Length: 433
Length: 165
Image 1 (cartoon, rainbow over the protein chains, first blue to last red):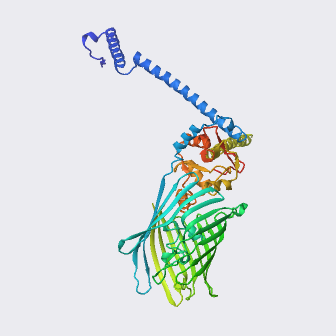
Image 2: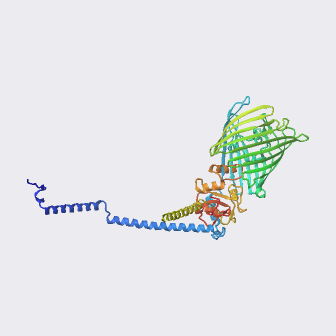
């Protein structure tokens, strides 16, 4: 059998091995040369690119050096500040260059310390109330629009003004300047106010004013209601008020002295207006805010005046006392007072006692509260006979749904002498702007 | 035979290193979260109790040195310094703080709120030149030697037990 070799059949020039090798070498040379050309054209850096990269690297190194220097300087400064803080206080600092007056004026100008403008805040409320009293029906009511204007006129003097727009029937408003006070704040121990102010009888009248938003409940306690709402106190006055702290250490005593004269125009529960034709009044008070019990305040006040609601001249003395706890979450207000009316030329005295206690606790945005109030005036009382005995509880909740607005819902039950109990409900949205 | 001993030694060394690092980090964090209370270097007061500091910041004490009315300078809302101030000194949130000062103005007890100063440089300058100025500021932001860090309860920022943090 003949074996057949399977040699590749090649064209003539490649049948020789040497010629084949030469051809392969030429082809490889061509391919490599072409690849180098391609690399030079598209990928590999040219000499100018290399220079750019080198300069960039050099720049990065310079920046790194600069950053290191800056870091070192910051560390040095911090160490110097720490050592300054650690040195005996008040010694190192005095070695600096004293600040010149123009420099001080420039800084104060930048800070706006000497710019005394008028600051305006507004308060308002709107609500719905209804009772089960006969011949009454529930109604929506627009509350007072209360504008508080304050202004500093110097570092120790300022003006405070509270202007009230009270809604009347048929959509009209009356304007009432409730407070208008020029204040001098000499120091912690001596502050003087001249003008119209709310009398410092008890706690509520000098702490809460007309802006309903500021108080927890929908209304003021009856004994501190404003005179034009049936209130029993001379809540406003025109004259001088002096207050300040007394040197008493941790007892935290403060004093209050007020002198003034303003007629109280009272709207009775019989819907009649009475001008009490007040004389010159004096009011003195002492309060204690013990430092060991933050938020606690106890005090009393004594108010003297004379009133003449008819032809009868009557001496009026009001003794009030309070103990309150006011903290961020917890609020407990307790006040008592006695109004003594002594008709001139008569031996008969009329004492009208009253008190209220209000407690509330805040749970987040909700603040449930409870209040019990009591006022008892004789039917024969020459000034407050229409008030009779009124007492009863109020329960409610305040919901602060916005940092400048709150919703309140309150239920009241009121007992009156010789009258059946009245239930009432009030919803209110109070706000500030 | 000696593997357990070596392992124990290694573990204890590692724990020591970790505790050292974490301790240093905590100390640094404490210092970073401490808020310095600064006054002018000319102010003679150097030490104050936390209770008195609170009384100053809530406007119950009108003069720190008995002569000059206090001018409070506080950080702007939304800053870490403001949060520390509200928590450590006022014990209030932002809304409570605003209502607190609104109430003070409403009752005629204060002419206005504390001055909000956003610029650290201006705050330093203001405290330096105004004898009654009192401000809260992070220690690393104190830039002028003409201001003085008050000790609170006898302690400076960064010291253990410093209360304003």
